[in-house]
Length: 268
Image 1 (cartoon, rainbow, N blue to C red):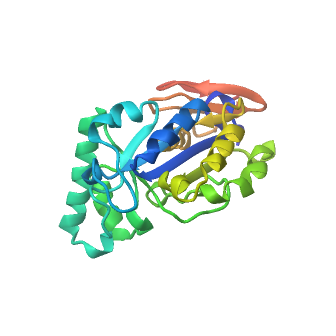
Image 2 (image 1 turned 135 degrees about the vertical axis):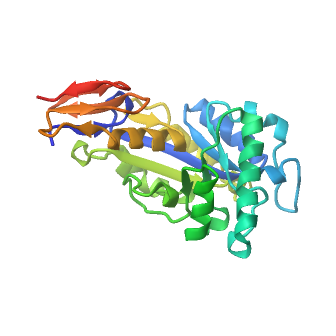
């Protein structure tokens, strides 16, 4: 192969965050992300907006669009049930109602989710895809920076409590490794319960505003990798065509090249 894939602007590293449930602690976490120029995806249960329980208070529906501006809003089911307890029709209702409510609030198609309680199985995945969801995050940490191969079983790198153990490896990843994705997940209420706001701020400070990292939401990662992997090659490998709606970046024998949407690139 005469080229190597690169992330946007030729970067070799990407970072994405993923947080569940939509509690009021998201407000403080979003503020941290914005301050350090990071991007996150927030998986929300619209049936819990404006409610409280002995452990959490949830955000209000009318603040969703402004609060998560610049980030991604994603599904997490309507009211966070165990899907293994549901009929197929109930699964469908949980995801479709959540998706529609979020789209009404955010004014864009919602295309992803994370699995409530981390459980996932074939029938559940089929229902998610049937309502138009294109990816879903698990809670099974890989503890590596490998790229996802199955977006409906998207295993993250690690929970935020483990992130510092991988930080040095990520920051010093050698160029020969190629693309590296650091995917961190959790719940913002954990910082309040565990009194670890200083920890997540230090993590944001050490990872944020770096020139060698592409900061992206979950759906931005998914869209870019689909485009990059979907490049069409000529029979002799001398030409590539990009049928997707975004520019793809390549290293061609040490030189950074781009293929815009609908364009071709001569490699030889």
